[in-house]
Length: 260
Image 1 (cartoon, rainbow, N blue to C red):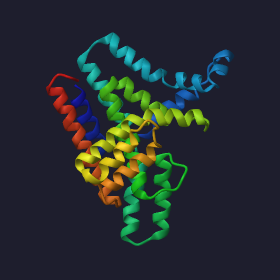
Image 2 (image 1 turned 120 degrees about the vertical axis):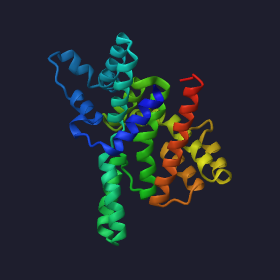
Image 3 (image 1 turned 180 degrees about the horizontal axis):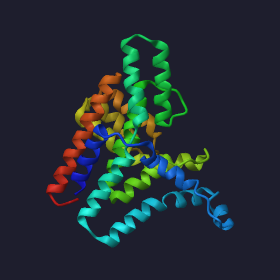
């Protein structure tokens, strides 16, 4: 079921245009701003922990309802739909397409404009090369969702997407939370880069990234990718596609073996 849901969701994401109102981001932002009459509940929601617990209620509720229904067909359909909503990144896809067109036309101003849009889509405050932004967008919108879906089902995928998309105040605690939820997907994604890229050059960098002191995920991701492949916009996209295919094949093997 996991494999079929993944294949269906990732295939539809490339061919089906979903209105923005049904993107998981919009759903979560509306839920976050939903007003309740209880002043105590409103006050509790102002704290970091309260914000998180309130935000993940939809994801937990979906998982709870599926558990109660105990229907393989409904679970499959809801899982595929949930993954599809969680991986939506139309702004990034459009900005990347426009970036390539501007590059072909040698329009530097338009390239810079589209690069800024990619930076916003990646959720990065600091400027970065297009290759690094593409890697980070792929990690957060595609690969991490797959990892948490395989590990924890649709609830895990939607909880991750919720924490990725919810609005929050910038603080060290939030930075730590994002470091934690992206740590495992980053190491698994870069491990794949060793297998589909230059293993000998990237292996040492990858081993350093899983040391006792976790590195910044963005830095760890880009460093390994740079060693695994000579990065340009096009080769970066090719690298992440090969990597995603590798893990889909792995999920298929685990499915055949009865482990997922």
